[in-house]
Length: 174
Image (cartoon, rainbow, N blue to C red; front, side, top):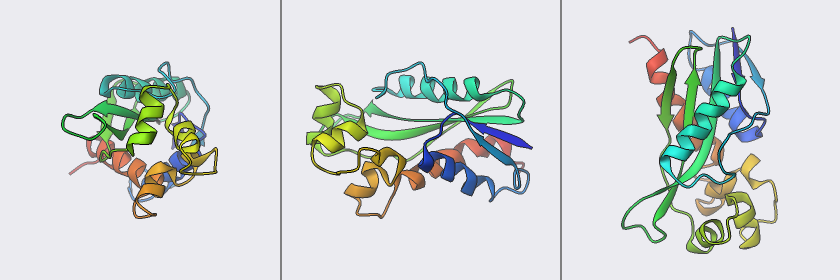
């Protein structure tokens, strides 16, 4: 079995690899990361745009495989929050005919970082770097900003796993 993943982001690929091993019907699948175009902004700013990005990644990665997976993180408007937005991850699994979607938990970035994303148009990695939260310009491929603000209690890989697990609900026999 082959599963292609529409990203080369280390945290996302590791999340897929670890989760797939927990599913008997997918265990042992060859995981093939691929760099693909998302067709959305570098920092999606709505639920719909983030879902579109994940679906576009999965669609672009689907060839000569059993499943493809698209993972996209983005912001969505959430009333009554400090910044008006929360970050979340979407997983889109494509079987060649239909998509199976899942979402992670959502969390709110510090206001200083949200301002860099919403006003300055930066993606989360660049916003976290500019705001001084990290000196790692590749934080999105490591623990992610979520790992920094939770002091390692929840990492980018962890919340990506949540989205994968919830998408896999539709591919597992009960």
